[in-house]
Length: 172
Image (cartoon, rainbow, N blue to C red; front, side, top):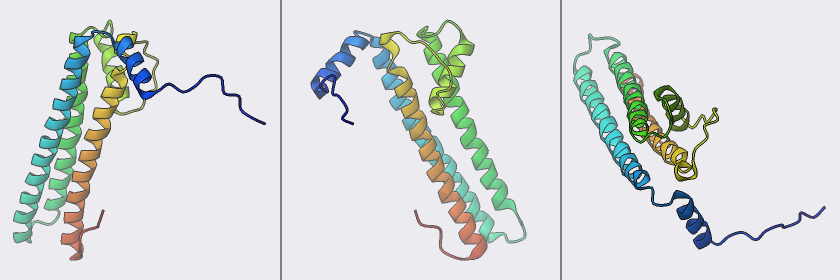
């Protein structure tokens, strides 16, 4: 059975022009794009600081052998701090969208941001054509932030496993 081709695929230029027409002159969207870039950068720095602090504490604890389990406590503290950075980012996104009045209420905005940031996408949130790219931007920042966090936590766990077993850290 042959599949009928009903319309030709648009060229990349046509696609980008159509997206630009949908977005229009929404300067707020460009500000949100800058906010997204800043948010990813800040998250990267925060995770780097958390991981560096963990590794410094871990090196210190290696010299003190009588503190059994202290390195695992510092690991779980690092996990907690990373989770808090993600929650802070969801709240920051919420306040930015509230400032631009994307949704009528803060609760609906919070749920929308949470679903987009985690890429859950469960709800049905009608957006005007000027804001339809917003879920992509929020999801993009969430995916990158979670990836950075996962890489840092993997590095920290490798440090713990190396210390406990005396073997090499797991390779990526």
